[in-house]
Amino acid sequence: MDNKCKQNTTQSPTKEFIPLSVPELKGNEWKYVKECLDTNWVSSAGSFVERFEKNVAQFLGRSQAVACINGTAALHIALLVSGISLNEEVIMPALTFVAPANTILYTGAKPVFIDIDPETWQIDPQKIKDFITKECLWQDSKLINRKTKRIVRAILPVHLLGHPVDMDSILNIAKKFNLIVIADATESLGALYKEQKVGALADISCLSFNGNKIITSGGGGMLVTDNKVLADKAKYLSTQAKDDSLEYIHNEIGYNYRLTNIQAAMGFAQMESLDDFVTKKRTIAKCYSENLKDIKGISFMKEATWAKSNFWLYTILVNPDEYGIDSRSLLNKLKIANIQTRPLWCPLHNLKPFKDSYAYHIEKANKIYQKGLTLPSSVGLTDSQQERVIEAILENKN
Ligand SMILES: *Cc1c(COP(=O)(O)O)cnc(C)c1O
Image 1 (cartoon, protein in one colour):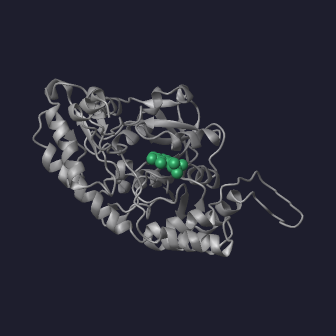
Image 2 (cartoon, protein in one colour):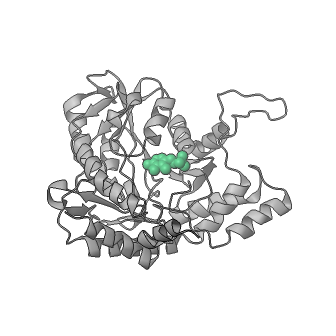
Image 3 (tube, protein in one colour):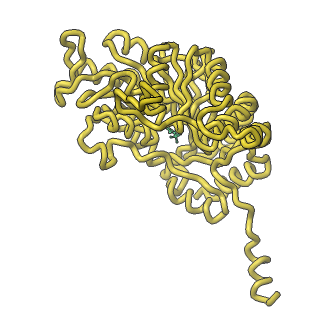
């Protein structure tokens, strides 16, 4: 080894990379996936699909579950079976990952973006009420957006970052104005809203088993409901809308959205660890909160008294006036320390595909987005890794 090389290693020892969020696959994943391969049941027929569906439905206390190829597909199908169509509108939060908003566009409908509550960062039910009372007309049992002239058909609350939405308020508004509720629970499986599981409420709830979600099937999603008619329709549409499988008769536009048995086997195994994963995520969150709470300029999401978050991805807010540098500068400093962090999602009303969608006085979402920084939150995060993250945040304060 030459001198230069040696010097490099002593001067800047490479610290182990700490990723933002990686899966934890230490249970029966291998065993069940192997079972699929050994028995030749690898595609969407096969017992794990049904077992996974039953398992999730039972966990959430729902009578129906339909597994889909991913969470986005589950949301798309949920909107389709709810009859959402061209030139209608769906109320949703401005701050979230883009997928639910895209699925609204897939149906020909448009999102209406609503601001978030600054404490919990979830869609603010009061702002939904304001939008309805100040901007809409109630005519022939239909809610009409006065500016766009479109019919408002549904609310799509997103349980953001593991924390539940205030569902009682959402369900009350929906009941009063004849709106369908489709909940995006993709980030919050295992969380509780007033002792009830997130995903147990709403007309339809959608889940994701993407690699970075609390449990993963490699890729996957599911919609759950108590309405058998909707569930049957969802299964029909997600398997090519086959009316006669011998003669290939299709009376509707179908989709190839069904989950495979291999993926379901993995998801089924992950379900066995869900409770442990939630406990671990909550321990990680508690440790971050306790160690970061006294740093000037650092704050985080408040867990509402009625909520038990799964703390999917732990996120801090960086106030540059007090902390000394802003969230993006901190991101870069942590990157140099080999620690992966990430900003929140750019509020959707600022994105090109939604330029002609209606946004109702968005203010808080922009602020949380500017200040937000998501910290390493893997279930497998070790104490020493977490100490390194905390130390780095302490060190970089100016
Ligand atoms: C992950 C996610 C989705 C989409 O799930 P995929 O399985 O990745 O398609 C939808 N909505 C939100 C809020 C998400 O975080």
